[in-house]
Image (tube, rainbow, N blue to C red):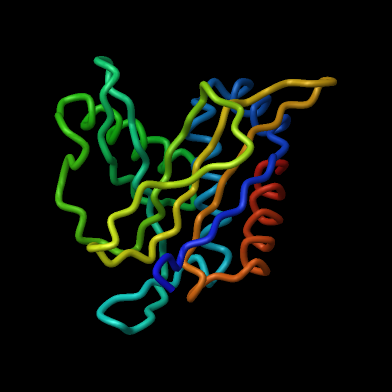
Length: 187
């Protein structure tokens, strides 16, 4: 396929996750990013990558999240996954601080394939999403985007968009990811 990626957008209940992050005095962004990486790492197909025409499965997937600087520009981060939230939160804080001292989108060489590309649009309650892509650059990394958290009837939800390479991930696997994500968000 000329465009091997397909995407799904759905709403995720984040009521308990938001309440827990606030009760613990921790960043909701770091909290839901951690829960998302736990879900990503629990679904094998989300750990598949194409490298030099071969399919590889990675033991661990890390995050490359778009981080906004104080001057409202953005930089791509590299946040190493850790199963332990406290360790992960330290990784997030260090990487946000590093991004604040850089310029441009590409803040370091990104040679790793064991990434998920993350972005957040906390200003927009979107119902669908698409990504800019360069077809000259081989890419099989999933892209996950989060929308604005909204509250209705005492429940908090946010849109989550997942774009994946269809040669590696099917709808079944996206369903498994969302099931895991909601379970981790509600723990």
